[in-house]
Amino acid sequence: QDFTGAKLALFIGGQLAVIRRDDTPGLPHPGKLDLPGGGRENAETPEACVMRELKEELGLTLPQTALQTARFFTTPVRAWFFSAQLPAARADDIVFGEEGQSWSLMDPWDFIEADDAVPHFRDRVRAILTFAPDRPVKRVICNDEAISRHSGDVIQASSRCGDRISGRVNRAP
Image 1 (tube, rainbow, N blue to C red):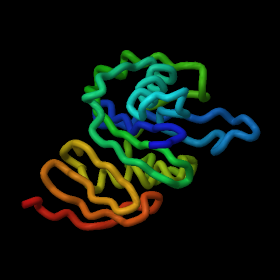
Image 2: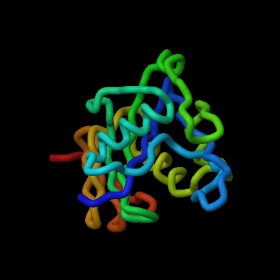
Image 3: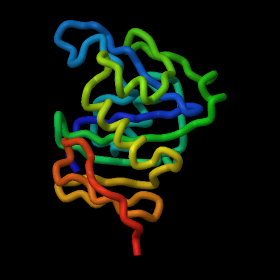
């Protein structure tokens, strides 16, 4: 599938890893709070893209099996959005890369409410917390007609990937 990049909502000990974007003219969302991730290089897979960006930006590696969600969005660009969780002790392993002004761990609900966070990422983090506040989502794929698998439940999500996720959770048969 054609895509431009991938982002990661990385929860470390329950806190969300965020990066303050550079304040460079012409850069989308300059100075805003962002999530690890970025543009695709060559023919890499979405998972390889997000893992490379995580290593470049925060110096962290994690196994691909640690990715708990995978959603594809068509707006504002064609990109993948992942989530993962790590224990709090892994924060000590962070080595900040050369992109961005700083990094921090913050309460994910504070990120959602932050006026200086990239707006569409606030919505995506909210969706993760709303549908899986206490358990990991195993794999969610969003296309134009979205049906998402959620730890044995089926979430019937909105029909447009770029919209906020809305829907109800039904127990799978």
